[in-house]
Image (cartoon, rainbow, N blue to C red; front, top):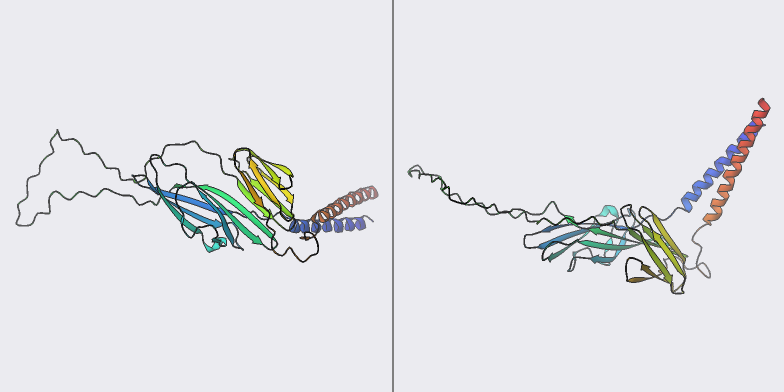
Length: 317
């Protein structure tokens, strides 16, 4: 009898584990799609700065599209890095661009904010990241020209000229700096930039913020065109999200407590959302029902296992 109960408990437990594995596969959150920018710069003594930006994709299997480029360096970005450019798969190489500007005085912080968009089946993903350019270690150093020799190699027929010892009153020559990058004043470390992502599918619009441990806390207020308001509280080292039910004409205005400007983002319905009758289509099986069923199976298996153990102990006693 005890063996029969143990078999049943084992079977139910295995079924529950399989169910939970299915939930993990079906109801797993979307991948964190985002661009990965980097930047470095070289500067000359007269203040001319040349910045080189590079952007790769976080995705290895699909390509995306650059949707946003905002730089604190004046001037246009030249190269293949531009709004509308294809952001190829991670292994297919980066997009690069350069900016050149002459600054009067100390070089300020040079930032670039990059936004990108991906379509993955019936879901669309938007990601954004900001990077600060760092001084490059590969700058060409402008060295002073080497002085010409004061005396040529004597020919066999020429008599060597007497060497002249330096006068004690002669001032020592001042060395000419050879480095082309002027030392920049030390500035306090700024908080790390958060990562903003937007996931859209056939029935929802989700705003996601990943705040690094070195980031700063802030609060965002999101309001739809119908007046539905939600707050997103972002804390360092945590990920926060806000979701809205998708509908035609949905627009969400985002306001941050650390900035005066607001941004209105319209809902973009992914492809393959039509042809399933009225309303928004069902994008997959009910993950909640699957999770609930798997949890019940797991609980039932645990109860039967405990009952079987107790009966076995009572029988053997």
